Length: 276
Ligand code: SAM
Image 1 (cartoon, protein in one colour):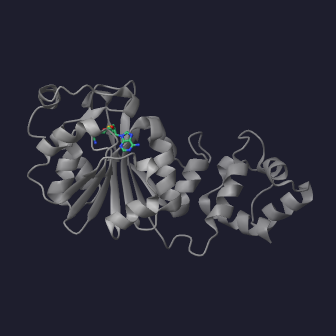
Image 2 (image 1 turned 60 degrees about the vertical axis):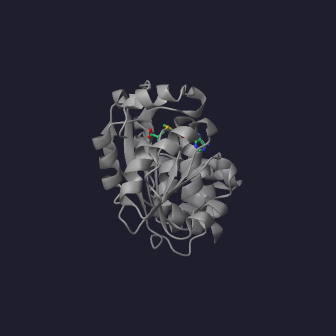
């Protein structure tokens, strides 16, 4: 961003809206690092969710072939027009991204794309899960989220951060934290630190799998975190103990485990075993 953020906002008489999760970035080298970390090149189409005052959008426009941004707040239009005036490869859609069908968003993007976003905190999980579960052409997701959420996304089995959402991500790809970002980097500074997570989508990881079925098993497995998996299966699927134990046995899973102990691969095997 060429003009200091506070000057830009005040020249336009813009007041930040907490309800939309408006914590803006302006540190150019941090923004460059995010775009470089995302691996964006001149061959890439990028989807940005929540363009704000356009600081990240600008760095994306410099490096990507095309950027499509969604921004819920129409009052940011004059600011984005000014900041992005020299880039002809950017289009901003002033709309709530969650109110658009993902298939329509993907139609607009036209092919494979990378999602890069400093996500509004209040809808981080719904956005991430929607793209993880439904996106057809997503190559990778590089998202700034609250640090504690980042730890959950990238957690390993048998840790306290590992949960249903981690397994959901692992079914489609691999997540890693690529950067920690202290709260002072935002205007205004939120109460927590943030981190950038990169999720590479690997379509070949579990081909031919009924993801909906696996996700049902994952949901049931984590329905009561402290219970053993066998008990959650019995309650969630109205199975007898012997049927639940037999499914675990044929998936090669010990009978005493909890949901948090299983990898995505093991959930796929378990879902198959329950189906048969
Ligand atoms: N990308 C900018 C940056 O890094 O400085 C702004 C990031 S700010 C954390 C999140 C942005 O998402 C805000 O501009 C907010 O208005 C926008 N936003 C919030 N909810 C949205 C939604 N449902 N659809 C599209 N944009 C949304």
